[in-house]
Amino acid sequence: MKNTALTDTHIALGAKMVPFAGYNMPVSYEGVNAEHETVRKGVGVFDVSHMGEFLILGPNALELVQKVTSNDASKLKVGKAQYSYLSNETGGIVDDLIVYRIKDDTYLLVVNASNIEKDWTHISKYNSDINAEMRDISENYALLAIQGPKAVEAMQSLTSVDLSEIKFYNFEVADFAGIEHVIISATGYTGSGGFEIYCKNDEVQQIWDKVFEAGADYGIKPIGLAARDTLRLEMGFCLYGNDIDDTTSPFEAGLGWVTKFTKDFVNSKALAEEKERGLARKLIGFELDGKGIPRQGYDIVDDKGNGIGTVTSGTMSPSLGKGIGLGYVPLEHAKTDHRIHIKIRKKTVPATVVKPPFYKG
Image 1: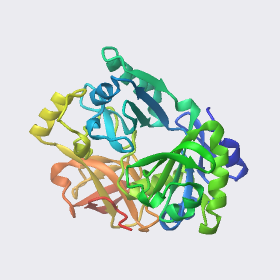
Image 2: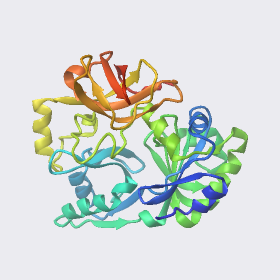
Image 3: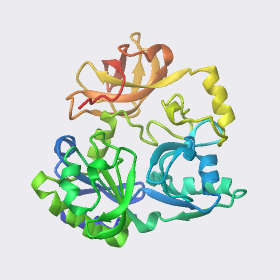
Image 4: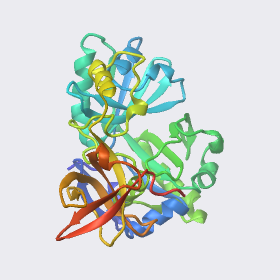
């Protein structure tokens, strides 16, 4: 079990710690609902240092990034980031990720913690002919997500950069909390605004401490992974391993918008043919019309009780006070406002197909 540089800090704060993607991680501090509300209405801080970071460098860096990712990285200017995915050779998804252009010939790929080794192997395989320089810096870097509508105001005193000027999916490499050359990225997994801060392991404690000092007047609190999951699910964001994996089609998962056929990438020809053929099923969002909490693996059935799909993610939405979830169903059951049913233990609970985000705050 690996620790982040802040593990002892989380334990001292009374966090409930759980194994996650090979790391000892804080799942909650005071409870998921309270932490969720802190991020929706104020500002909270997640330690997500378990995430993986790869640097792709040199004159062939763009060629490699273009080959392995689905989005068009040639559109990235220095200081911009884009959401993308790594496609496999069989129509599925190796991982979803964010690509940052740090310098003209330097790209940072931020990948899911559980997929670091798999992603590295996959990218390396396609680098054998391209010969870009690759560095796995995951073990040396920390990542804090400072999220919520008060994040800009609460953190402004810590940097000389005007945080309000950093647009969504843009970033600055600047001073932050007394540390030089920190990546301040206007990204996140919550839908409530804020920043993600990339720094070295030996810098993150100072940054954490100063972030909480600066945010004290704004009610800043530490937030665990449980609230991260409810926040992302209210936005309808996919979670790798639940909603997307090596067997799921990016088009069925709603990721056509980051699939760019302006270039050749891994399995792009087959994916283009799939898009042309059309889909058989689709990832939908749903809200329960009755009481209950949908969970991953629960059956989705039609009004006659016939199985039509499986819940991939589900929870009780703290913001809406009702059960919400995602799951794959045939196209004829995927239309907005269509009635489906979720099997919860021995009951069948009616639900309505809705278009995410569930939370419109």
